[in-house]
Length: 252
Image (cartoon, rainbow, N blue to C red):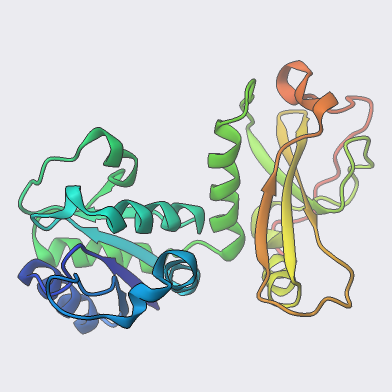
């Protein structure tokens, strides 16, 4: 599995020590471009527009290393923000206790132990329970929804394909059961949209929307959207209660 190591100085002894330990533990490594003060790195030519999003789309995990210049680096926040947009947890290794400024605290929600060995063990545990592609993008959707006014709570999530807000809600799956189908759709479409349709009997209904089968140009760009205006205007984003949701098994 691939882990992306984000550092303002990938040649710093801290970054090198953790990277070497991760390789020894079986990870494949991708890294931030070299700090320009250390030498040339051609990846800077398109890093923000293409290089970073493509690298993190391939990654299974993300870890930032708080070297001495971490909090003042322009690309560290960009890489961590891109990781969140890809549904990756922002692990932070900060053995020197570099102060985390307010603007970076959202990227420091998963702190690692200060010792290399303990940090590697934590990341290995994450690898062993790696979320599915669907789970990663649902995490992105949930973050997106927190920014919408009136966002309600829900007790569980049910997923179907092309589900309108009027129903029927008779072909819905738990995320674990729908994950293989979602993986196949992403591999064979130009885009996939995850739409939060609304809430029915405590469950957030998520509709997976795709272009016609003729657009087989994956991997897809996974887009996000919230409920239609008339649903968002209702308290709790409630869907018609006279239509029940039929839930599929958790495995296909």
